[in-house]
Image (cartoon, one colour):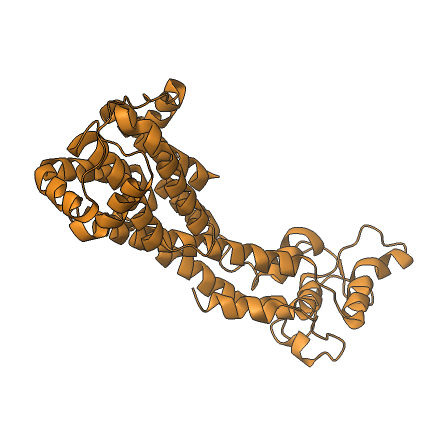
Length: 353
């Protein structure tokens, strides 16, 4: 949602540029502006579109407008062939100098990390969703039943399992979850590194919200070289038919303009970079989530507090004596690992971040 809002704000900026500065061509440019930012959104959210292609397509469509309204104003043709010829000539005559290449470079450097970041977030959701629906073995289910409910059969309804006993059972049942921990830790570290790299020309917010400035520079560059471009286009496309026409004026909604311009005075908390930083900081708190899940469940919910009588699987005792809780489950034949279908493919994807 934040990215969608950002894309819309950047589109508003560009529309405002045409309405305020190049009013005569604003309506004709609207479709190209909308298409460009639609392609930006599609690319960010994983669609198979090429940034180089949609950047070129935007500047190809911009050149006929600049030519007809600024370089050779008041000149149109009765057919679409002439405008198409101008559009096709753009890459040969380079009216915008190196600005299209600069835009391609900035879009490539900023959109790809953001696209990868979104894909990584979806990967994390996939991992979480997969581990939300685990089917434990019968042996594990019996061990949990014995730990939680066998005391009730003896009328010990208020008793809780001993901490060591709880850890042995839960670590055995959640052994596969613990195996996820190094991969989960590496996943979070990859997100941190990716987020840290997304600044300056790699910051999608900076690039998109300043796109309209490069568009303005491109139009100015073409206007300054107007005479040269006029001669080159005449050679390639011939001379157009002269007609006295008036271009439709801009009808951009002023409420949208105000909405779009608000981003220039946004609080720092509203910036995408700060939101991303807050998210990463909150995620760091859970970097050992899977490795410590059994311990957390026992400490926070399941096991009796230290010093209190507790259930050891057979009776109520004051202290629990058993093998080390770190290794006990490894030697228990009843603790078969639950089957985590799909986890392996998810972990494979995490190595590609």
